[in-house]
Picture 1 (cartoon, one colour):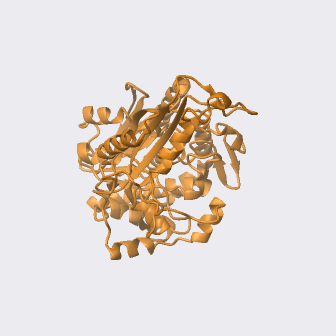
Picture 2 (spheres, one colour):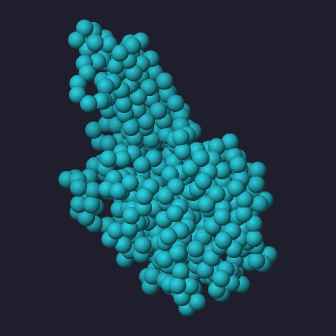
Picture 3 (cartoon, rainbow, N blue to C red):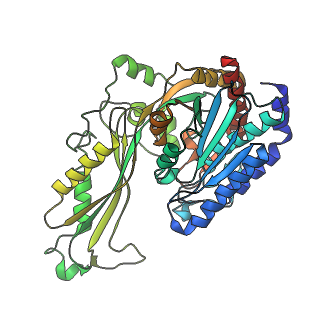
Length: 457
C-alpha cells in the first residue's frame, strides 16, 4: 500500500469517523413507513458525500419505494470498471429496552462504534466512499468506479430489480464489489464466496370471529395460538430436518472432501457458545455448525404474536395468531418454488377449526461466486498486502438476494469483500462495528482498486 494512501487515511481518520457517526444518527428504517422521510434523508446524505468525495456525477433516483443513490467517476475507458453496491437502510432496532445506548445515538466504546447500521451496512458501505476519496486525492483513481447504494435491502430490495433492468447500460461494469459480509476474525481474514437465498413468509390463523373469555369458551373452541404453535412445531422433525414435502429435492449435496475443506476453517465451538451464552448448539443432525449455517437450508420463526401480551393478566382466548417465518436456501434451491411449497403445505396441514392466510413477503436466490477471476485474485492480494495474511474462502449463512440478479442482468460476478465480525450483533440490540475493521477496510478496499487495475494493465 502506497504511503500516500496510509498518510491520507491517518490524517483524516477523525473526519472519516465523524462523518460515519452523522450517517448513523439517521434512523433510516425501511420496514417502517413512519421513517420514510428519514430514509430519504439518509439517501441525500450519501448523495452529498459522494459529491464531496469527488465523483463526476451523482443522483438520487426515485423508485416506487425508497430511493437509490447512484454516482460515478470514469477515468479511463480502458481501465476496469467497479460497481460498488451497498445499502443505507437499516433494520428496526427493537427491542429498544435491550440496547445499552439509544440505537441512533452512536457511542464509541472499547474501540467499537455502537449504533443500528454500524456494521450492516452503513459502516461497511461508507468505507468505499472513503477509499474512493483517498485514491481520488492521492495517487489517482486507477479504476472507473460506479456506486449504487439502495434503501430497501432490509425489506427485500423490492424495487432494485426494476432499476437494474432499466439501467443495465448505465450500470455496466467488470466486477461488482460488495461489503455486507464478514470475516472469520481480525486475525484470520476471509472472502465470502457463497450466500444463502431466502423465502420470507407470514402465516395467520383465525379461529372465532372475536376474542373470547377463556373460561366461558376454553375447552370448546380451538385456540389459534395453540394451533399455530402446533403447526410450527410440525415443520421440523426430531432430527432437525424440515418436513415440507419437496423442500430438499434440489439441495446441492457436497462431497466428503468439500465438506472436510469447509470444516477446516478455524472455528472454536466453545468460544462460539460462550459468545452467545448458550449451553449447546442445535440443528440438522449429521452436519457441523459450520455446515448448518453455510451449506444447509433452514426454517426459523422470526416473530410470533397473538392474544394478550400486556402487563398483568387477561383471560382471553384470542381470535387470531400470526407468525413470520424465514427459510434460508442453498445452491440449486429456487425461492419461488420453496415459497409455493411452503404455502401449499401450510394450507394442507392447517386444522379445520382455523382459517389460514399465507402471505409472501420477499425472496432471493442463493449464490456462489467464482474464486478464479481476476477480481477475486485482486481481493486476495489486497488482503495479503494490508493484513499480511492470505484470506480464506468461506460460505456465509446470510442472504444478499440481489447478487444473483446482478449475474443474470449485468452478466457480472461479485466479490464479497466484507469486514464485519459474527459478533457485531447485526439485526440485534447493541449492533456495533470495530474501529479497526472500519479503517483497515478502507485501506484494503483502496488496495483492491490498485491490484485490479494492475492485473489488467
